[in-house]
Amino acid sequence: MGLKREPVGREPRHAERMGLKRKPVAELSGYKIQPGADLVNANLKGTKLAAANLERANLVGANLEHADLIGANLECANLVGATLAGAMLYITCLEGANLSGANLEEALLNGANLGKALLVGANLVNANLTDANLTDANLTDANLSGADLTDTRIEGASFTNAILDGVIGFEP
Image 1 (spheres, rainbow, N blue to C red):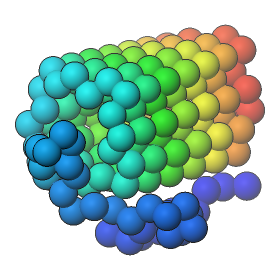
Image 2 (cartoon, rainbow, N blue to C red; image 1 turned 60 degrees about the vertical axis):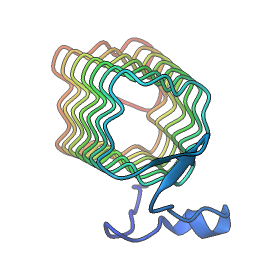
Image 3 (spheres, one colour; image 1 turned 120 degrees about the horizontal axis):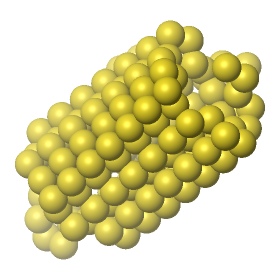
């Protein structure tokens, strides 16, 4: 059972039912965050950015631990070395995003679109990727120990040298 994604530019079909509509500009403590924003090393721990449009944002080294990014658009965002441990990323678009070296331990990525994403050396220990799309993603040297990949699309994904101990719903 594969995940069906809406065409780029449209809301995920669950978004309206969940009360989510993409915001063209996210607001955070009075500051406006727009697509392409430069948030290098920003401390956004625990922030609510649900349905925010952060397409092409530069979040290198940012701390998004336990952040609420449900339904957000992070397409082609640069998240190299970012901390997203325990973040809520349900139905989030991370297509073409660079998450190399990112910490996604225990992140909730149910239904997320990670197609063509770079996850080289990423920490996905105990992450929930149920119904996610990893089509053509690069997970070389990633640690997926204990991750749940039930019903996840993995066509064309690279798992070269990835650690897959105790992965649920995946057979290499």
